[in-house]
Length: 125
Image (cartoon, rainbow, N blue to C red; front, side, top):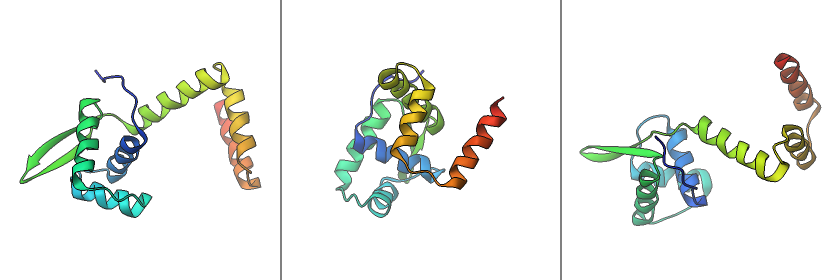
């Protein structure tokens, strides 16, 4: 069972690096992804703290094979859906159309994106 706990922004970005790796990853590899992908430069002790917190919150596990590797135990898709549901419930009173309307108003959509959305909606019926 997953522990229910919110992630800090730093923990979330660290978790995204682990999910994106799609294979076991070391602390040094996480640091490299944080630097290259997000422009974030942390000391290894700071990243180890993020990893410890993610483990305590039930997002990752680790094992040693000479060095320590980290693996996700919480799926990115499930977490993303949980966060979207929370936003829908909190900000939009549970209304998916209101959530989508807000998203569409924030982002200028190309004609291609609009056509893709229409196609996706049609497939739901």
